[in-house]
Length: 203
Image (cartoon, rainbow, N blue to C red):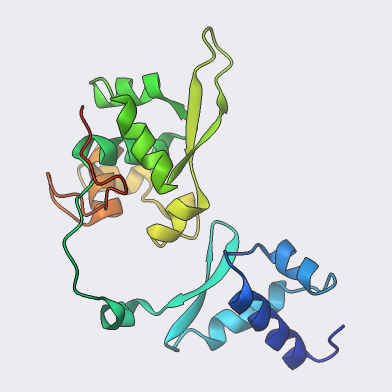
């Protein structure tokens, strides 16, 4: 396999460039005959930090992405997509902060019933996943966020979500309200999140 650090960097670059989806360090290593790639990934991250594309880690998976300050150059004029309803945004925020969580638990935190379509939209978007069943009577399905959720919101891990102390310092005891600002950057009624189904939540 590769002998020089430069050779390994080039091999890691090529592997990530050709990959159809983000890869873990173990998957990259497997492509390269078991080579140790952790230090190389750190080195490449630093090397690409000021370039037009960056190497980033999201949820333990690595991929190249357009530098954030250049994203506007790649946008194309198109019809404004429909947005996620407030109910869907609330549900997504609750899953992010409390996962794994059941539909009943989401409803308890929101204080209102959650339409089945709300969770279906988030599942279809790939931002939440079914994470098993709660070992209680009825064995309800529980939900958790996905690596795609982290990638979409630019989070390396859920640890990057604001902590409870930060929320209290901001005067927000309920993390769901702060999550609207963190996850969407929008105001009430305009979440800024695209609804992949093209429809609104019928909550």
